Image 1 (cartoon, protein in one colour):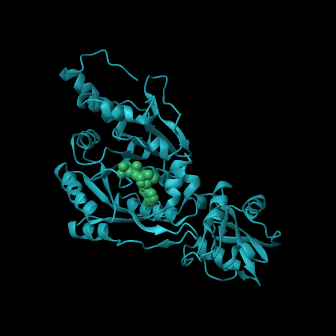
Image 2 (cartoon, protein in one colour):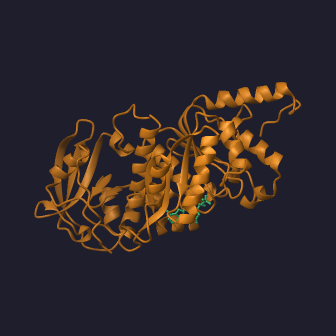
Image 3 (cartoon, helix red, strand yellow):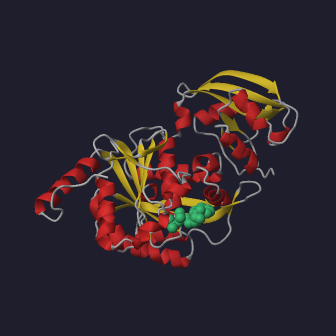
Length: 407
Ligand code: ADP
């Protein structure tokens, strides 16, 4: 890391640091500070997924983890063992994670994630400052910052250093006790004059481990009610998803684990809401990066010429080549399904060049396999002719119902 030769307490040195901080931050279009009233509500999980979803939406993003209590971003993204390096100017070079996303985490500097816990106040303050000031992010559309939990000194320092043009996002869970913490977070933001982009209710409802469907488990909607009551925007909910925990345990990146799931669509909806709240609507197309590829091949399971609800048992697949820019169907080819064999279809469809599957229902395991093959899946589509489905998809008029349970 960079060392200063000046007396760190002199006014001149402080001014210089302030100027460097401003220089670094002013090329970042939107700074998002992810807060929570207390630990364990999924703040880091949400911060990481927001950054990934923004990157997938084509936004140049950075993810900064300064949750010194438990820097968990490295675990969540499967980056354990990776280390940060300095660039030629002596600044911290952020670690490239995927297209459009670089990451800096305190966990990428420490031997053990817990090491930071024993640091004393002034050291923590300096580390936080260094992470904001001495990282060569370059120009970014979004910087998502995972802050320490609560409303104490550390999140306060982070918020003050990031400046008043920062957007706060408050993460909560549906329980009353967590909701009470949101009030404190809102008061915290108002006291600091931080703009609040909105509240996200995490672990709200559940994704069925068998069929991948979003089901209501406990009382949901507390975060939404509270947002309304306090006059702040509600950005959406994320279900309790066993896939999130499994991915974390396996050190697997969430992009692989969540692709094509209701959790992924929850994040997409939240990203759209954030873009609206933060005035980032210059591009009329709020769709995901896949549409920006323009020419794509959509695979649709069919039976007697119509979309077939039973993905694994359809007679044929329609491979629809479309130009997403022109919103036109270029070609429809029908091919017979391979013999029924568990786990075969994802690899087979990938070989056919499909980069999107639109189907009625699909089990979670199959969705995971597609994700591994880089094929996106949309479930819950209606029975219709493949051309109509593809056209509706391109025009954003495809009516999506629930995933038909298909173990
Ligand atoms: P925080 O940053 O608020 O302390 P984390 O993001 O570290 O919380 O999450 C705490 C635990 O909850 C982790 O084990 C994480 O995998 C799990 N978790 C977070 N969000 C979800 C979710 N929507 N579904 C299932 N597990 C979740």
